[in-house]
Structure formats: C-alpha cells, structure tokens
Image 1 (cartoon, rainbow over the protein chains, first blue to last red):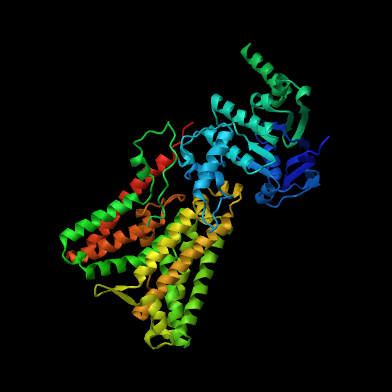
Image 2: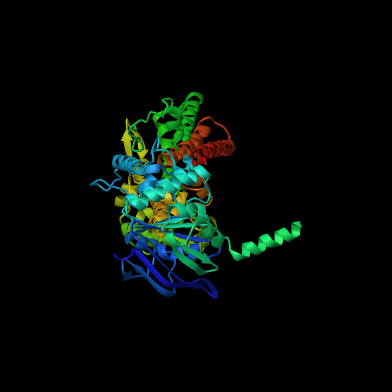
Length: 257
Length: 349
C-alpha cells in the first residue's frame, strides 16, 4: 500500500465559538477521486480551505505524502502540488485564455519578458491534450462558456504538475451537458494519476467518477464509504438527510390525504 | 510605439476572416487614437498656430506632465484602484524639494532624493492602508488627499510665513538638476521642453511593462479578479502597493519638473488635477472597474487634453468651452469602454 497523497485524521476547525468542522477523516490517493458531499453549511468549504492552505486546522492531523503539515498560504499548498479550482474564482474573465493559463507562472525569455509565443503554443497544446479544442487562445476567458472555463482551470492545474486537484463545486452552475463535459475532464485528470477531491452536492455527478465518498453534515462526517460499500440510491438517501426526508415525505402525504 | 502589436495567430478553420474590426475593437486605445486624430485635424484646420512648430511645442508640453501622471494612474486603475491624492502629490513633492533646498540650503539633488523617498513612503502607505483595511481606495486616498493638502499649506506657512516657496534659482545644484528635468532641446530652431521626452520614455516603459512582463500580467489580474489571482499564487498585496508607489513616483517626477522649471511653487497647487489624470486614463480606454486598459491609451488621452486646451486658446475661444469638450469626451469614452467590456465579459453558458 503506497502512502496516500493526502490523509486527514479527526481534523477540526472552529471560528470563535462556531464549530465548523470536527472529527473528519479521509484519504486522497493518486489516481482516485475522493468526493466530498454535503448540503449547504455541512463544512465542505471549510475542509477544502484547510487542504488548499486558505485556513489552518486547529484539531487533528493533516498529512501530505506521509508528512504532517500546516499550510500558511495557498501558495505553499501549490508548492506542495495541491491545486484548487474554485467555482467562481477559476479565472480572470477579461484576460485572454493563455494569459489566464499561465497566470502566476508566466514563461519568460532570457530578458525577463513574457514569452508570448511559447505561452500561446503551450496553452493550445495543454488544452488539446485534455481534449479541449479552443478556437482562439487570444480571446478573453469571459467569452467562454462556464464549462469551458472550468476546463481551462483544470488543464492549468494538470499542466503545472499538480499532484492533487481540489475542485469546488465544478458542476454547480452548469447545464447537464456542460456538467458532463467537466466530469469527463475530472476522469481524465484521475486517469493521469492525479488525486482528485471533488466537492459537490449532487450525488449523480459524484457517483460515476468517485472512488470514495465522504458525507458531511453540520460539520461532522456522516460516513466515509468506498465505492463498493455504497450504491447511488443509498448515497442519495444519506445525502438528502435520509430519515429526515422520509419523515418529510410522510408529512406531505398526510397533508395531501 | 508598437510594443502592443500582436503576432498573427495561428488560424483555426472555425475562425472567419472578417475579424480585423473585432481585433481593432479589443485594443483599448483605439477609440482614443481616433479621437486624437479628430481633435488634431480640427484645430489644424480651424487655427493657424496649432500646426506651427511653436504650437506643437506648446501642446506637447501641456500634454507631457499630465501624460506622465495619466499613464501611472492608468496602471493603477488597471490594477483596480484609484489614487485621489495623485494631484496634490505633485505639489507636495515640489514643496519638499523647494523647502529643503531654499530654506535649509540642501543641495538640490539631495533634496530631490529626500522628496522621492517621501513620495514613495506616501504611496506605500496608501497601498498598505487600502490592502489592510479592505476599504475602497477612493475613500482611503481621499483621506490622504485632504491630509496632504493640509500639510502642504500648514507646513509651508509655518516655515516661510507665506503659501509659496520660491528662490530655487539661487540653490546649489539647480543648474544640473534643471538640465535633467526642465531644460529645452531644439528641433528646427524651435525649443521643446525635456518633459516631453520624460513623458514618451515613461509611457514606453509602462506599456512594455504592462504587456510584456510578468508584473504587467499581474496588474491586469489583480484588477480583473483579485481573489482568483491570489488563488493561483499572484502576490496581490505586493502588486497593488507597487502600483500606488508608481503613481507616487510619477507625482515626484512631475513635481520635480515643475519646481525646476518655474523655480517657485504654490502650496495649493495640484488640487483637482487628480480628476484630470483619471479622465485622461478613461479616455485612453481604462475601465473604472479595473482589469482593462492601456498605458499608450492614457498617453493619448493626455495628448487629446493638451491639444484641446491649447487649440481652444489658439482659436480665441473662451476657455469655458474646454470643460464642455472634456465632458463630452469623457462621456463618449465611457460609453465606448462599456461596450468593449461587455463584448469581453459576455457570458455564454
């Protein structure tokens, strides 16, 4: 058994007196997708912000490749190969596709100027390797569709050697077809040997690509299942609050009757 | 200045050919260039002196100091921030230089260095306050604008008893410093102020920085989406603080040019100029919301300013008409910019 890329054990975080997250454990392996599911306020964002270096945990342990760690900034997480693609923060809309692609890691010539030719070519190649065929890498990212933007951000993380890719609700604002396209790239990143953390509140998006499912509710883990331990119906039921939903259905029937 | 020119992209079969207009439209300075051409042609036809060498020297000079500031302010605006203290800064730096050299007998070069350090410190403070508090730079720099204005008047009156510092001509090092900042050079027998060269130089450096360097890329990024930039590792705080310091540096350059040319400075100088800088930058294609704009555009915006201001004088019109012209220019520029941005930000799902 190889060391997991990321291993969190009984991790917790409080904001003042608010317990945002407590006793959550999971692993992220290379070439696997760990899905984090939960309703709004379940603690999904807190968990990924700890993994991405935006916040620091204040209980439990956080190991990256077997080594215990505490990031002080997103830059530090990036340097450890953990790249995060946020739902709304993936790209700068007014900048061109290739400038976005290289933002923060611009290729330079010997005189310190940006190598624009290389930038355009590498972007085009990296995108087409991921199966994304763009008309023009000089166009502003704002002219792309929501799905295409997520894909550019994913391709960027893959290109810059991320070992772990954290995706924050990549399919939330997308139509059915666009969401399918994004999930295809998630699978592609997984098959390239990256460890993927997929945050979503849609079990139908998580189940086809996921290897492991961490269910969160009100800051606590409802359970962490391997794919063979759970089926889509059970996942959906737990996700939706399981027993609560049955009670609600019962109530609704009572109203109708 | 062709630093912004693009290499022809490798064409995809899905790209139609008639893209020349589209390509031009996404260049932020194109509207300003057309406007400048119109203003130039108009005054060349309407007045006699406008196109004479003397006339050209006059409106270029008028545009030069404004242009230096407009370019710096444009960089700051692309980075998503405003600096309302920029106008008063041009007076503050001149006052520091003048008081140190005329009242304390300091060598002009030393006085210039001290005032540069002062300017950079104020710029850094502006940037640091904006970033630490998260308040809009509009409010923070309005505060530093008022504070500097008060300091300018208060300190000057305290030291000289009047609201003016003069007598630069008798100071040590005036000759050599004046040569660098306020001398003239001749073209076909017509003297041109050296400030024009500073303007062209400053614009060239800024334009190259903006489109050809990492830092330039970061300027667009922090202005377009600061949080996204931070997420991919762009040092947002450092970038913005450097931009505020650049504006302060430009104000020092302009202040030095002014004090060495006119040899005296009024303590209430520079008030209201901050809006002219912003107007020139907006005419040059800068968005008020940040993330889009051009250094060359801002320089052209200042050129339009200079040409119109002097052209109206040559045409023997009342200078009141200049304000009307300015208002119309600004409104049309904002309308054009707005259309451009919507083109660029158009969201398809």
